[in-house]
Length: 80
Image 1 (cartoon, rainbow, N blue to C red):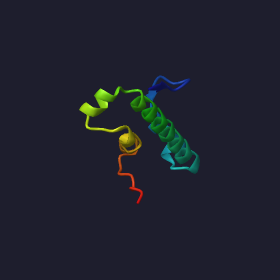
Image 2 (cartoon, one colour):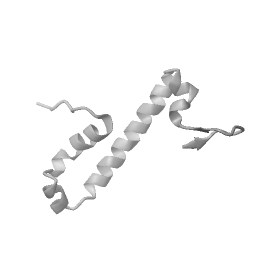
Image 3 (cartoon, one colour):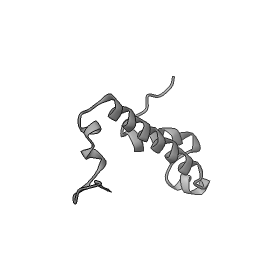
Image 4 (cartoon, rainbow, N blue to C red):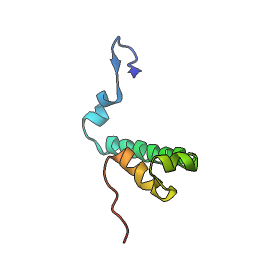
């Protein structure tokens, strides 16, 4: 949460005029943040020990798909 400068009210990023207006800048910022979250999720998952991944029913090759699902909330189209 951020405190708006010069006011007594707390705001969050969803209150931002850029995001609220649905501007292209707001969409690009949102997409950029999701891309950073995706990269961080992959990095964290790659550092997990193999036995932990096995207990979770995952293989290392599943990590990109699982990270995508966690961040974007959708299935990744499988390559054929």
